[in-house]
Length: 154
Image 1: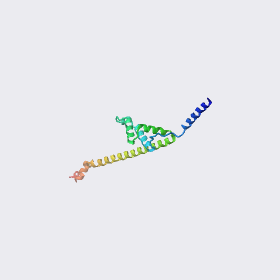
Image 2: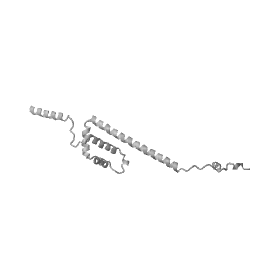
Image 3: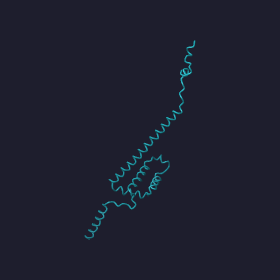
Image 4: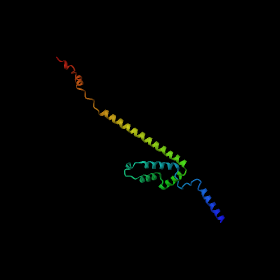
């Protein structure tokens, strides 16, 4: 009986120590760059305000992202679980995603500012083209017609 208990204990210890090693990657693990690209797109979809969805569901948008990158939802989720098992590396990936989103936001803001400036410039140009010359004051009109001496007629 002691040998049997010792045997179970050894098997238990072997299983315990074998599970403490490196996590096993799923067969269809997304390469890191692809995972980051998909994750970034999903973050954007999750941040869209409900009224801006115009009746399109978030799930539909997510399906479109998976289709665009040629991955399945399950493949992404398995890769996500795998990549989360190493918190330090996952924080590095999340920092990279944040950098990508910040760069996209800055590019969008620059484009928006450029568009606003072009609109303002075109409105200023249109305003100066369509604005007629100011109507002269009545006194100015008399001077232009050489009638400034009419008041001095004897």
